[in-house]
Image 1 (cartoon, rainbow, N blue to C red):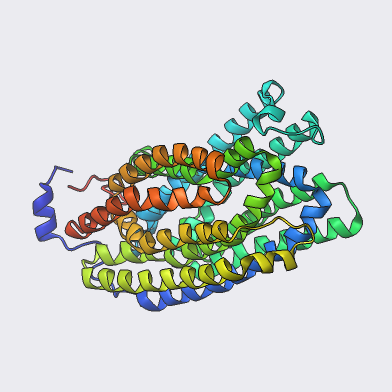
Image 2 (spheres, helix red, strand yellow; image 1 turned 90 degrees about the vertical axis):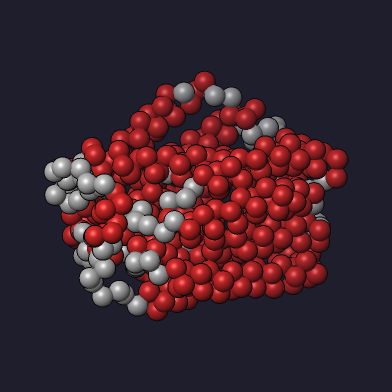
Length: 469
């Protein structure tokens, strides 16, 4: 097919799917937000029940080791190469255009790439397992043997790696506007893990069984969700080996690469707190930090679940040129997100210490300034999350990358010295200050840039394999 100037294409050809009736985007968004709240309420119950059960059952050192390994796995969230984010950005316009063949090519290419990667990473992990000084990595004490550290690290990291391709189902469901169902499946993963852990404690099984069960629950639920979706509602985009398209894969990877770098930077910057505390103040201080941090992290998960449905919705709106809808929803969701995090933060800052003392059988001495700082961290992220969703939908990633990269450098140094000089409470406050100075200006610039150049972040390849533009 001969090449056509891109400007002529934009003047003469309407956006893909422009002739199709636009879905009730706002209704679907509200449904997604409501189910996100219900899902997060279920997720909020899980740690409330689990922490007072698992903390005394495991002991502070073993519990701290478990959380430190989980933090290390969190820093490796970039293992999907950004393909989950890139896939959702690409699939939303495909869904708006009704191009299921192209969507299947993207899905097939993404699943094959991540499946091969997961197998390779597991192989490397187990090959080098004996050479890694796991006890030194996590600064374990005499109560934790090197063998225990190795077993727990391999268990959690292996489960995490295997879950990388399986977790793509969440992105696919979001892009297909099945946010509610996806949220219910994710809530189910937490509830299944809760029931299994309670059963282990009741049966008096070894403490390591709790860690194994908690690591395996998300993997099993994502597998069941994938089978259910692709053999029912998503059969038209079910991944097939013959549908893997090198050209679609290259296009997907070019966008995903930017998301990959952003994810690496943000994961390191936000997941390193537990390791900093472990090395600066010791494993005994990890429990005092991670318990309130995990509790307040539920606010962050709520912000993510509430705002991520904006991503494909904005992609659909931008593809149709409906900027007024994007601006209006962004303003409303900013207010909703801030209120959803600010009000609980105020309550916990004043009453959190008494609540934690009454809740936990083992006192951890929660500092009100620590609780306020942890809550403030999620408030500032909530204020920007809707604007990030617009940028993600438009494929405008560079401003985010610059802001988070500067934040990562400043915060890593600041958190270390803050913890060493002032104690636990300083760690989240350093993050809040650094975020306001670096990420906020970058996010505001990127949002304006995304609205100035609305377009189709969909593919340059038609479903018949021909290049457009």
